[in-house]
Image (cartoon, rainbow, N blue to C red; front, side, top):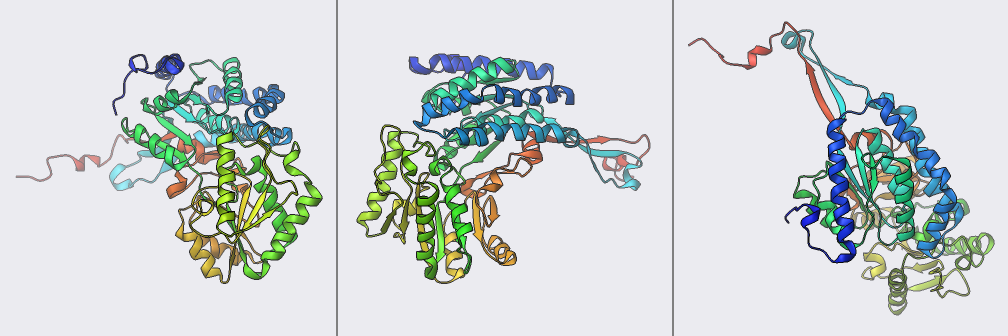
Length: 474
């Protein structure tokens, strides 16, 4: 794969201007970083502090853009996740920036180095790219931006072409808040998405599917660009014996309905003791009837991002039905609304392992319920699959839950809950294996986008010359 200047890449007219603009923006940020390769704490604070008022100022327009892109999007979810999430991360960074930037001393052998000093000084990496997914077009654009700016980098964000209204608004928000040599937004289509990771970034963050993640990593490898990949996976929820109760099941379903299941850390399937399956199903039915009657016809339901995605989900359900799996609708009118692309929650009990539902990440309002007889059998099922972003364990005994986490691998985990590891500004978030590599959020994000530069201050008198010739008298 050859890496060419943006102006020389042959593309169709639709994306050519966007690619050329990206090339100019990248060059401008490179030049700006060369003039200020180690921004002071004050400069970094100024940049980060601009984010909360930016999000608040555009709060209503963010909700409108999300509704336009998804067909339907709850205003409450927009406020709590897409607006408040980045604000919380910015405040956490401002509260801790001085400590994060401080030098970390390392031990020296006094007999060899005298009173010299060694320390790690976190240094900016340079110009960083952020490839944003469609499901959280503001939270995953601006949240990691906080970490990147805290580390002293210049940043270019590429929104998804599945969310054009959100991408246009984000570009406007960033343009009125930051100098483009500090932060910029590249808006375009498929060709821009393909060109973006080919540039010689100093670091690149991609959030999305493992398949595209492999392509991004391959393109980045041409320039030895370090990458952070957040890729998702089939996150399981395991209910240990005796743990199926109203509080736990209702909390799980509430999380499943965030973005109508279109979330990389959503629950993909539940492992439930076989004697508790009916109780589990009944709790779900009662909860939906009491708290969310007609859910898919209300403003609480986020629309599926496109008709193609909606057709895929319907195909999964039809395949499960034809295979003889038990289909449990949670609404009497279970047909999706193609105008707003709203789809009801459906349970699928004990689906065969060879269905797409069990092989692919669902990313929608379908929840498989897998009965199990022994905990060992449940853990064997989890460990047969790729390592997900999260493993969720419901248990009355915390020690037993921790043993489950010790016997599985995932990017993170939650005991008696789901997905909370992705919502805490101070807690590093990311995957392992097929679910990704690297971390963002808090100090872990600061470190991810920093160069941990080792520095030695040599003493005037030491014995370090022992490393140099001559080593012996001839």
